[in-house]
Length: 241
Ligand code: IPE
Ligand code: IPE
Ligand code: MG
Image (cartoon, rainbow, N blue to C red):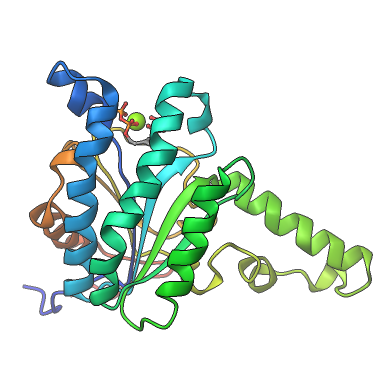
């Protein structure tokens, strides 16, 4: 029997998927699924913070989600701004530090203003880091990093041969959370959908059929239990027990 103690992963990322299916199954319009997902966001953030997870990154809107019908996109932009209004105070009381990763371009000014306000309001909190991935794409993140580094090189501030993993990492959207221990995706799809490409190189992947609006503390715990059954090797060897 292994004597390994129960370990809470430091950095956890979640692809919150299945809102549309949750609504469709009930004969409701898709947006009702997004609305119902708010409960899962609240529970998951509070549970993760209670458990002592250091950073939680939630995929809320991808660079590809603009392909959806204009009405759904508009709903998501407004809804997420309102969700921030409703939930920030409680997260703040729980010492959660909120930030946003992704591109600001194309986002309505009122949403960008709200994102900046929330970041500023919670910036001194010392508890869990909550990164909300909004208008986020893993490829876009790498393109943005490469652009900055290329500019530095063209201005002679860095030599091409000095560009290494550390330099790339330091130009990601959240360089302090550049590696994840556990990635959870709800709703059964087993793909990454352009989330955190660099950051999940050695992340444990966990897929659950539970639809995001039904996701609760117990499902997060189940994912962490499964994480504890994994053996992480990072390309090396692990001593057999
Ligand atoms: C996830 O649920 C929320 C977003 C992508 C914004 P979906 O809206 O993708 O739900 P399904 O996959 O259609 O069920
Ligand atoms: C990923 O889910 C994006 C978010 C959860 C925000 P999607 O529903 O957009 O992904 P695909 O289209 O199934 O790959
Ligand atoms: Mg989906």
